[in-house]
Image (cartoon, rainbow, N blue to C red):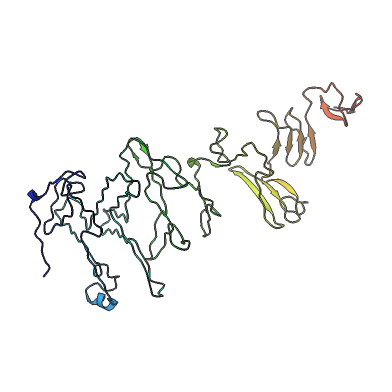
Length: 413
């Protein structure tokens, strides 16, 4: 039979208010009285100044798995049998509130600059001996379970509450003033990983790390600036090693652009990828390499045609007649044409099954294939060229102007 301690009467101590002064401190309520037992240590007039916990439960054990199985918890880790302190709260059908197994509240009004933290729950798991690879130390083990599909299950809910008029800030080289999770590796050697998601029980998460877009209080989503920010100097920032059937990195077109080299896009156009040189020379700013003598290409594709820019890795790659190392433009369409020219003007060079030169009239090959068409000139050359000559057509005539000013008709219209 366990011992029952009768609680003191409410008149014995100043009840206080929620998280404020009072002999009988409480968390959210101004009046909390233990039903079976209540221990109070220190008062406002005479606060406790001694070390040591107010209430201590110590247990030393050597329990076998067979003992756990026989005690009514077969096949489990004995969590309900091996606790030094156990809190169980069962809500019945008429319950309209949450049930709390163990609640920890900590408040600190100290003016000290030493270490006046307030820790609501402090847990330490430690392995000091043995050689089993199955032994694990856990600071906390939390399980959320749902037995009906209409319920939700949250293994851990963490809130960072800022009840000041000053928004919290991010600090890249230390502890930020407000934070949801703060991870630190400690000990005599480096630790393996900060956060690991694994499949220990044969079930997977749909999304490993998700940033939702719930809108509340006029703000959409839980993150205002950077969903993931890396200010470290790790060898690699993002290291993708697994095999991914759809994409290693997927960015939908509605998500925005991928920007490298700057904090914002240089224009407001619809580019999905921008490499920004930042005013410095980059030769090259983009490199595509095979690391060996192999075919490499870039494909431009829409519903009516395909164009490839590529480097041949062997004879006749991309186009007939290429050899290893050649660069080629391949139009993958029977009537496709490759154009070179200025914006909002007829292209000055058009390459298809024949070659068209000039920005005048539309190409007219006369039914020929593998021929050259030169459009009539726009402005007639009036000055002499240097180091060469000018070839052009005028009213269908083939003309030439040399460096000494001689203008000669090479062929009639």
